Image (cartoon, rainbow, N blue to C red):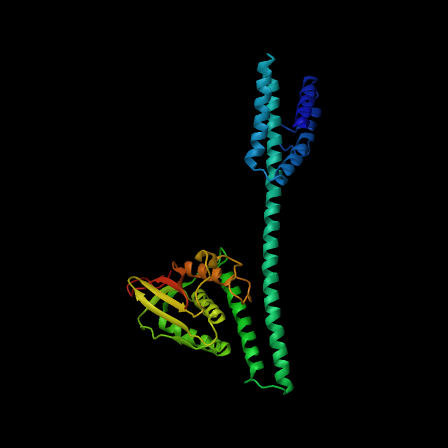
Length: 344
């Protein structure tokens, strides 16, 4: 601010001396670009500093507004009237320096935002690469042992290979679902038979149940039961819930997949026998990078992505505790009636 006042005084002195070119070099053209002027350069520095200090753009503007009030207030107090030409110069200097300060402030904020987004993206890519490498290394070592003839596919090493391949598939499915949920990507709503959906899920779930050593059951579903949703996203969401159930259910206990119509909704439930949920806010389970339980494999994004996938089809995803027994993750979607349009 002292520098601005010095430059304002210099501008007024040059204008009084009719050296208008020199005045423009100090404060810039009236209503024109001023970034190359002395005052414009100072405004850029000021805007950058205000951004680095974490202030808001309103504070940048108000700071110059307060200065204008201080100048006019002091002139009244000292009974030193400001001439029309001088007030016009003051206004154009304020206009130029505010424009330059705000422009630089916004530019710096955009750089900070882009840097944060890049850091978040790098972190996610790092997590993804780390998880893929772990599963791939385990699968490679397992396959090497099997090929050597020391062990067979049906033994413990074969089970390790199965789990590693399932883990790779899980990460890829989750990543694809997250990409589909990116703003701007199209959501393909279609009528989906829940019975057909369960028939597809039974195959992959049975393989994972076998690899985990726990029983799995999926109830029979009314063939007329249908929902309007994005098939890939819904499959990924239910698949994620099943994978979590297999991961946390106690050894040898059952994981169950059920579906039924409740009023105008379809409830798709995944129940496990994990022993019950830990204390705390249930919504925390759906926040990104949150993990619970002793098994911390994965990066804690699955439930967050699953909820977003379900919500994209106008549904909800919630969890219900069964103290001492386990928990139930429930997807609720609007029931599709035959008279409803078949695409959206």
